[in-house]
Image 1 (cartoon, rainbow, N blue to C red):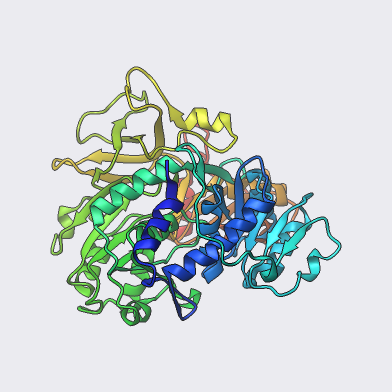
Image 2: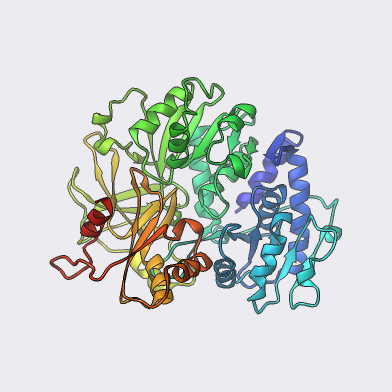
Length: 524
């Protein structure tokens, strides 16, 4: 199998002097991108002998973050993005669990990388392509740093052959046990997605596509590789403009937009979605949360020449696997709960809707969505117990096998479209990020030593939640001590905005925490 890197190199050969990337106010051609990635690839081949065949990237929204990822793939490895906004302890755990022994770092994260590696037994090789001197923290340490002078310039760009089951990238999402959950996506999984999405969207070298997602978010994989495999240009808004990139879209004549509904919702609240605001746009894709009719309609007026495409999919099924084209002017009352359906499977994906007994339910009945096919990862990273619970096979379900249990509740509409009705568990979405509330509870419980801890998404939004709050019964630590422990262990979007101390936590008839009554207390 040729793999992701081969697809990008093929585009680069056809479009060598066309723009490949806009970042930090500069435009870079395919030649520049591939030459830089080639220099990284040569270093990785020379220094990386990790058993996992993975390299980490501690970089974001910089030329070298993108060249680093491509270079890792050209060297026949998979990449592991660390979170620039994550606590050092969380990035350290992700690095350790991945088994990666090489890290690509950009200038902005050199010091942060040193903080991560303080707790790593090592040795780890750090490639800092923008640095002229070895970082001070690396001098005399067990870790080794390579800088700009070590890059092998001028080598003929090439990509190592990789098999279909080679890991293309490894991402970590929130886990119920307090440990980040690793999901390794294979070359064949992501190759199948890119092929299906290219057929669905039909990008050309004339297109200019947004890059709105953090590299730790799997939707960023779409940004990079659907764009580059078509020879199009990737346009990365500066971090300061991510929540309201309307001006950037107009400046760059963006033709293809991709974001969570939350980003569009913020732009709507800021009155940035005026009719005709985005005349250059021809395709607008939303994913990661429920898309409300209000946001979809406002966007269709702001980008009148654009198709509005609502796609759905968990990380375990490679970015997205179902989709629905929104028709402007559709009355909100015609859409269940005023939310745009998640549509029908595309590419090699198959779906089933099942009850608690894992048997298919009748059309129109509510059930859990199962996903099967070429995009399904099939396992969690070095976690057989979790894998056994989430990826299932049985004669009743049939092929393809295994099926992934999404935990999402859906029903099939009379038109044959899947309609999303929420979660079957305590997982929530915060600005598109999956958050297992049990992980938040685990961190608070450890820090507070409280008898009972209950975390909830709050305030609620049609797309999920804007944040987290927590209730505690008992405990010895102060609120600030608990919140500081949360800040050190979890990304900022998982840290509770408020802690509520209660004498008694309400229970339902089954003796479980009554979350509805707690929610009513908050609403009151």
